[in-house]
Image (cartoon, rainbow, N blue to C red; front, side, top):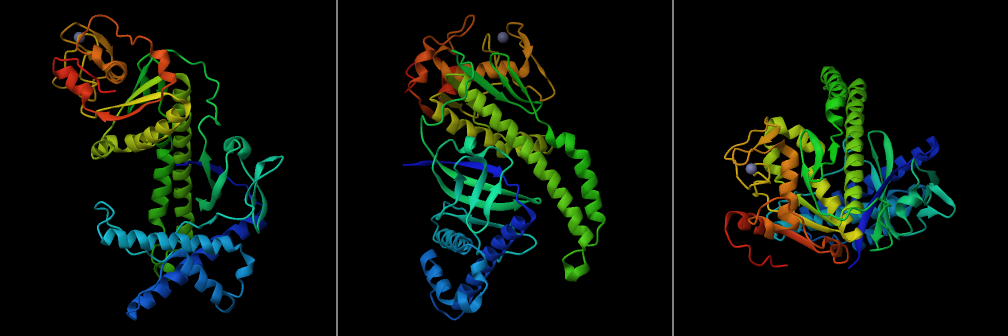
Length: 432
Ligand SMILES: [Zn+2]
């Protein structure tokens, strides 16, 4: 099975190219809405429409000269990607009705609106992609050579590009490239490798605290930009919502655009921070343990919600999973009910209660006083990489011969072992 990765770059089109990109996205939207209305009409007449992508393409090729004589202005890929998306949306809807999507309800596809939907289209065939000897550019059929903000060739790193989705967000155009993941073809960045296992405690105040004392601060992009965002949102709420037949005034549209830009900037800062942290971790340690955080449960707490979303734990785990697999690093995901912050890492005493405000862990059993996150990170490291030592305490816990771990990447799904071993008595078999 081939695994895929996404590489996203910001495009830097000329004004003429920007008009062409908008035209392609508009063409995709037109084709999507046209085909959806045709299918709705067929259904209302009691017919059973064929909504495979191929049937849609066939019908379009038959009628495009009549319905859209301007179709040649855009690459045929723009129309084809619309049919692919619509066909997928309809399939999701029908699977969900048949109960094949594990309880997830999927609604009937909606028409794409010019104002509210994200302008996008995709290339899957043809000569799109990198240009030989021109690393900061991409070739988009019908549009031409488009300059990129980043060194795209370095990001793609010789891997095959199977798809390119072009979209606009908050006024900027992006190309998302789907590339084939080749184990070994993307060597880990030259970081000085450390030969001991590490535990990572993801936090609210600091993004991550490692069991060896390394601390990664939060980008706190949201907190820093909050003032600007609040101001922009206040401006937006003052703008007229009801003019232009309920679509809102032009000045409202501009204010909305500003809010979107601030959100996009925050998201970009966050993605950058998480991407760098996960890459560094996977390249530096042979054995990493993290907690399976119940992100949904935490977001329910309003005071925490903003920060949890800000630090984007789910994305952190997703990236760490594929990057450790690529680098041949072991990753342990610890059971979410393991009391990593309430337990003393030295003597194993579990506190009944530890409020979020207590930043320093103080143990009543042995008198240990330590940063709360660091104590939790050490517990996570032990529970993940050496759970057999959990109840045989005494001094530092070291895992013997951890260097061989680099040759045998094993990914373990959350297991109840860590918890069971601590609370029960028998060290026993770890089942690895
Ligand atoms: Zn203690």
